[in-house]
Every structure is written in structure tokens, then in C-alpha cells.
Length: 475
Image 1 (spheres, rainbow, N blue to C red):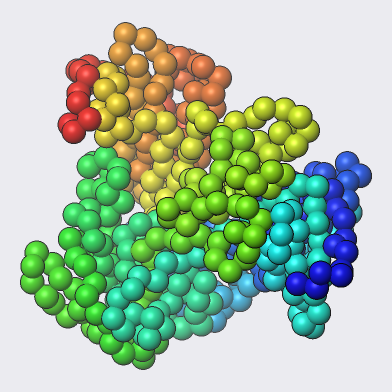
Image 2: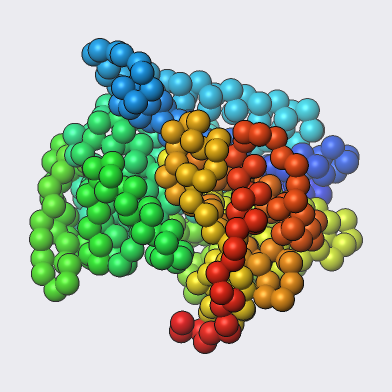
């Protein structure tokens, strides 16, 4: 650090340009504050560049491919159907380019100073930025926001790093269909990519260390997802620990796993690392800023999203909170209000989510597993998707919907759907939950026929299962 240099003074300095931080930048810049946003590589953060939106773009292409595979079911004849992954990638790239251009326009219109470069703290509320040409700038903010996000975890497994596995970043850039893709991890990223690549024509093997995929969820959900994968020809290896890896992803890889005390070798052409995320908090000088980390390496924040350093805040995945773009947006609302003198906290907020397999899995509020663990008694309403008339017209009847309603009352405690457009149906129930609408309000509503939302009427009109009594946390 050049001690004779005086840092440039700003009202707000933001490290990263993800969902929460870009909204903070645009909002306060439009209010007339002097705001600097520092971005190392992906303008707009991971969501529009390498995560949520491009992955859903690829997934939709895979959905179209699946319709061609089912063409006989719909009375359509087509010969010589083939997947052109270069064209799939180009469609994704066009969308990403348009989104990045829109972000750049928003930064310019808001009055935010966008600085492309690598930032690190060199003192309290003071950041040094290394620019692409090697020059540096020093910026000090009255307030500073950390929004450096997370990256794919690469476990310390012999030969793993040397095999140069794909992460979601590289997988979204494939211009070929992998002959045999081995996926390490049966969570969100692993399952979405596994199904998409299988539909494009890859042989796919998923390695999951737990006894079920998405193991935190209810058994009926995980069993339904497991059947979906098996029906699509995806090999799922459960209770398996990767012991060593050899070869090069993109050419030939061998993965040795231990399953029930026995080692077995899996062979493929490509390897995808999808076994969790780690925070981008290393080598950015947080200790010089007085910012403490959790034992997992995330930025330690309180319920107001304040770090341990005065005037320094954190937003999005780097805080260790739920890793969803919509949560990062809510983080923006929390910090916006608090910087304006309010007392907005993150505690008690709803965390809806959707796994974008086909069909989707979506949930908001309590699952049965959570309700039992918390000792919450409930009534369970459940029905198969084949009972939803719109699903019949689409030939998309796989799955079910279920809702938990409080015992002795009408309040909806949670909703789960595994079915076509589950995320959209869940959102309708979530709005009812936000409004405090009793489940009978949905049951007695007049909803358009035939729509998927209309399925909520027979769901809440069905006879609930016997009241689940309070259970201990180990139930």
C-alpha cells in the first residue's frame, strides 16, 4: 500500500455486482449518492452470467429435446433428430449478452461508477482495485458492501483437481454432448445438469454421498426424484464416497468410490463437480478491514446484515444464508432500509425455492420433516398431479402436491409440489400465506379452468390425513 496516497472518497463502495449489491448501487446512486461498484469478471453477478438464468435456458432446450424424444406420444413424426450443442450454447450466449448489456445500461443510467477490476481491502472501509491494465485505485466508502458470492467446491480428493473437472460454469459452455458424464453431487446443480445432459444424449451417472438425493427433503419427494432419474436412464450411486480420481475430464476419467465398505470404479468421459459451494472470501483483505468470518469461511453478519466492522455490510451468498437470487434481492431491501435509518432484519422471512428438474420440485414453508422435528402438529392435504385436469391435457401427470395446515385452525404452514410448473403453483400458495388467507380461501375460490392453479381446489377439498401429533426431533 502506498501510504502517501489519499483514497478517493465515496458514500458507498460495493465489492461485487450480484443481485443484492447491484440493486443497492442503483438505488443509492439514483438518490444522488456517490457510489462505486467493483466487479472482477461477471457484470451483474453469477445469476445472469453463469448460474440461474443461463442454466434454465439450457434446461429449456433439454425440455424441447425431450418433446422430440416423446414425439410419438403427441402424434408427431420426425426423422433424423439430433442435438446441436453448439447451437444450444449460442442460444444461451445471446441471452446472456443481452442481459449483460442491460446491466451495463442500468449502471450508466443510475449514475453508479462501475469499475471493472479486482478489489481487496487494505484497511477499514478502504478498498484497493487492480485494474485490467495493472494500475490501481484506492477507494474509501462511508459504507462498504461485500458481495463476492460463492464458487463450486472442489473437494480435496486425490487426483480430483488434476482431472480438471467441469463446474457449472464450464458445463454451460459445452459445445458437444458428453459421451458419459459423471456428476459428483445429488443436489440442485447436479440433478438439473444430469437430467439436461441425459436428454441431450449423454450417459449420466450421479454419485451422492447420502442415502437419498436432495436428502434434506421429505421421503416422498426424494423417492419421486429418484424414480424420475431412473426412468430417464440416469444411474444414481447412493451412499458413495469418492476416494480418488484419475484421467482428464473431456477425455477419459475413472472415479473410485466406496459404497457400503466396498470400492468400485466408475468410468466416463467427463466429470462435473456439483458437491456444494464455498465462499469467495479468501485473499481480499477482510482481516485488514476488521471483518470476521464464520468457521465455514462466510462473512459473519448479524440480522441486519452488518459485519463485525463498522460501516461494512454483506449481501447474498457470501453471508452463508440461503443461496438463492431472490434471497439476495431481499438482502438488498434489508440493507437499503437500514442505511436509510431503519431496522430491517432477516429473521423470520419466507424462503421459497424451486429445483428446476422436469417436472419441478418447489416448496415454501414447513416440510413434514421439519414440522415433525419442531414438534408442530398439522393436517396433511395431498393429491397426485394426475388429479389436475390441466396436467392431463399436457400429458404431464408425474408428481403430487401437498399442503400442511395447522391443527385446529386454517393457517397454511407449508406447501410442496413436485409436478409441471410447480414453482408457479407454489407462488400462488405463498401469496395466500403472506396474506394470512386460510386454506379455505383457496378451496372456495373460483379459478380459471383448465389451469394448473385450479388444482389447488381439489387439493384443499380433499380429506386431510389424520392429525399428525407432536413428535420429537428425531422422528
